[in-house]
Every structure is written in C-alpha cells, then in structure tokens.
Image 1 (cartoon, rainbow, N blue to C red):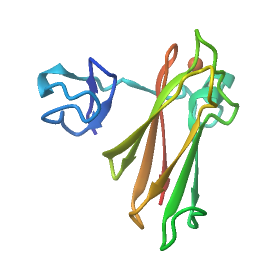
Image 2 (image 1 turned 180 degrees about the vertical axis):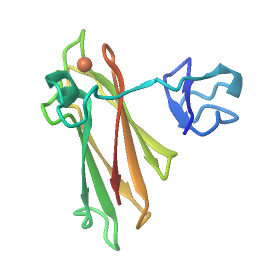
Image 3 (image 1 turned 120 degrees about the vertical axis):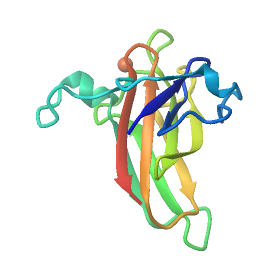
Image 4 (image 1 turned 60 degrees about the vertical axis):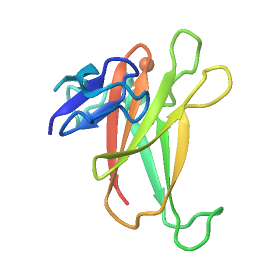
Length: 146
Ligand SMILES: [Fe+2]
C-alpha cells in the first residue's frame, strides 16, 4: 500500500494523496509519496530497545466508561518501553485510522503529557491503525482489530 506524507504538517495518508490535507488543509500537490516513511524494526522477532520505545502499543476495550451504547475504546501508548517526553525528544502526535482512512489526531506537548491517547470509536469492526511521530526518530505504526 502506498503512503503519502504531507510536507507541511507531517500527516500520512494511505493509497492516494487527498484533495486537501485533513490536518492542515494544504492541497494535494504538497503531499509526497514516500514508501519508506514509516520505520520498521530490522528484525520483528528480535526488537531493539529503540523499536520498543517507538512502536505504538494498542489496547482495544469493548466497553467504554464514558459513552454508553457500544462505544469501543482504543488506547494507544508509545511504546512497550515508554518513550521519553523531553523538549528535545518527544512524541509529537499520534494519527488514528480505521481501515486505513484517517479519523483523528492527538497532539502532545512534552512538558505536560505522557505519550498516550484514547479514541472513542463508533464503528464496531475493522482495523485500527496508529501512526506515531517522534520528533527525532520519525514515524512508527501499529495495527489492531477493533
Ligand atoms: Fe524517539
């Protein structure tokens, strides 16, 4: 699957560049196809410490404590070893997708928050994708069944 990166805000879209960036609104021609934009561990069966600090960890909970009537919570944290949140090195955002279609972004300021977020899903099935952006180490992705 092709990946396209917004050269203005860093948002990633799958398959094709959108008419306008859903985050910053710039037109399609500001997107660049970048097949290697999202980092992958060199050896998926033997993760390094760096891999473990960046690959998002997804926890899908079928029951929501806030919204009744079947809301599904998808919690994401970065990563299995919690990533640092310092002014010079931090997780800038997590973008969430359902079935590879963008749904929302969570931003992080390193002084105030940990690198974790939750989305309250209306959809009842599909695949959740989380792409996090580390200001030093780039994009990392995980997926989970909803
Ligand atoms: Fe990092």
